[in-house]
Length: 417
Image (tube, rainbow, N blue to C red; front, side, top):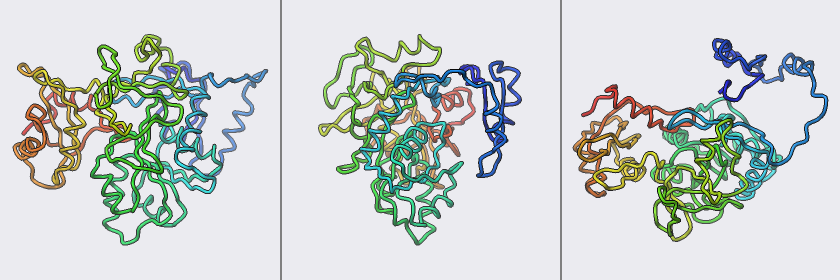
């Protein structure tokens, strides 16, 4: 990322600098590294060094279309790409999100999401600045600390990913008190299971507001603040965002209910990928729609549902199998804690549906899970192979890295049952 972005200056804490220093020889663009202190007070030495640096002779005039940030994608399906996000992207998106969520000056947000990710930066931090509200930042998610902070009665909003809510639910089982000041819980960055949605409502008395965004597009869709929040749905388009569903191969726009690629238009869409014109050209249609690569469908009420990445679609015996549908069913089994479904090459079927399962400290068998699926799914959607593991590979935001999981399965690093 340092080489790709041609970064000249790196500012970090001690841990970050120790990570950077071994690779400085292979990052010729980096001219200087500055180490911040570990305390909460500003590191005056760093800012003094910056102040003494060679100044820009003339101020640079900026327009809404000028690049503000190169945001690197999560890399769940391959190497990260740098999305060029403009000042206008951030401004329009913050206005839309803060309006939709009734964000007020008196709100207090507890933010544990990393600021290298758009959920933390473009929503949490920028929304706070735009509304002039209060934010409490944490370096990382510590579930006991978060639960204790929520019990103090000052925090009105908490943004997280599904794994964070699962940890908070587990902690709630050890407590008698429940947070009283919360008005908004938001989840994103990875699919939220209907089961977790229901359990949070039962334990905390609030319905999670699930939303959908991307590094390249910031926030696109969200369940309404006032109105029905449908479990399993990523909701309705934010103000200014246009959405359509198209057939991935032909580009034909599909009617309501049809599953295809979710495509977007709006002031929130990035300008393209930094120094990758070919990759940029591939993500726009001829008529100017951004191709998200996510499979989705829309119901009669206008709510959208994701079915996974288009690259992850499993074609088994000529039938389309959407991994998310199988995952949501398996997550409802009382013995399943986490699950990832993907397709592996098969000589007869083309691809076979494969499930990788983390159990809830119970004894499960391949046959039991297959029978469970057979009761609720068409036979061609049933996992042909089941693997049990202690954990799934995830990135910093909790997204399952299926490309790593596939490599482990192909290389025989995971044994089947």
